[in-house]
Length: 160
Image 1: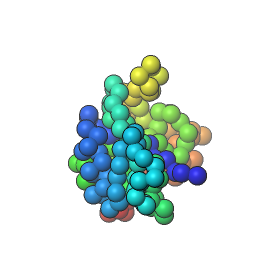
Image 2 (image 1 turned 180 degrees about the vertical axis):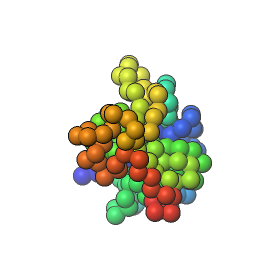
Image 3 (image 1 turned 90 degrees about the vertical axis):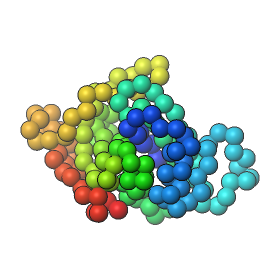
């Protein structure tokens, strides 16, 4: 089975810039998903689909055939540093509004967004920190059962 990573980036970023940043950060060949002859894909290549939507973090990045043994959080931290932009990835709570925010320096922390489903896909807005100061994040909330508990901050060096 092919593992899939789904990320979002801050601002609109061109697909070519995404592929270049991924190739630099992960040190693997990166190719666009569409129009690639499967027979000619180099071994270890990452296939990437990039598209834009409205809302916060409007650039979506799907990575197929990810490098074996590379933790996703380490990969996205390296990618965010290389790109110089914050990125989002889904966390482990299965809460559609909770994500991990990876700052441009690679620091990781949990955040919440309002999520609205539209014809253009999921639109995120109103980012706020996942913190014990919020009643939504206390007690028996999914936030408490996450690896990324409220108010946690993973410094860039630990994420690398």
